Image (cartoon, rainbow, N blue to C red):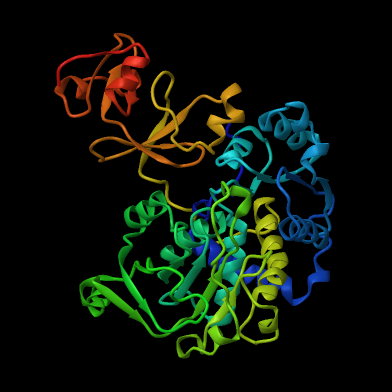
Length: 447
């Protein structure tokens, strides 16, 4: 796995806030005349490697590349790819990202798969959705749509409704909204709340504070859950307006983002009373100026009879995906330049090969599935954390390591023991528990 000096988009964090805003302006230029750019990427080939079903994402990317003058090759049906024969994703991208294509768009059912593709491919890789992890280009399209509708992102009140647990679109969108200073109201279907690891990241990386939320009457979606929460990354002087964040009343909504139940990732969980947005919802005073958004496809969570309401913009979201993806691909291929600075490096130490130590807790992570055959379990250690916190280098799920061992002596100590602190970083191996360490052949001593 070699760093080829390329830019990939695996997570929305791979773009700085300034880069995102500059890409919006390029998307505006492309959208002004979609047929005027067929010389920009002439001779360039994009490969769409989709190991999960997709209509809009794949066709949006393919349309974007064709409008840029490039060509498209596609593997749109997993049954017709070599994965059905047992070929690894790493081998697939090394072949297709060789002489076959100049940029890859990958959709895969396992969390962290896009990071694997980016590590092994010689050409830029775009994450078209990896398991329940992230879907950064959908987030770009959502942000772009909201920015065009409202003229800004900072300070907006955005309601997220439905399946917030399994929706990778929601996870990416949350991180981006927090970065831009928007406020988030979560109204999940019971049992489908935002995962703890998403909330933890929002608090740690973006300073988000959480309070209970009281939302005005929204028939069909309010009352579907008693777990409504208000998440804000507002500045301290603004937070004072929220009565110490004990309870926040939301009387004005800028956008309602509906999501379908992600049944392909559910284990037969009950969704019979799933929220449904209708004309009566839009009649609520709080929704007067709200925009209704949805990443599509919808099932039955939005009534068809509100499609002609000017506040319903989910089809516009899909339409704006083409110029947004045109701008992104032109940038990653070096056909347009951005003046904005790249994102600052995260405050993490270099990767650690876990070896006999940690195992990612996320059962959907590629390291616990296909990657068992060829991936080294790799973690990133965050600085200034006690006990040490390590995140999976693929799916980003975090683990607390309460025991630290010496890779040669096979002796392990509690993380805060003096002996543990004396172990050089290159000789450390981390464990969650004493039992895990013993199972790996390490002996626990003192501390």
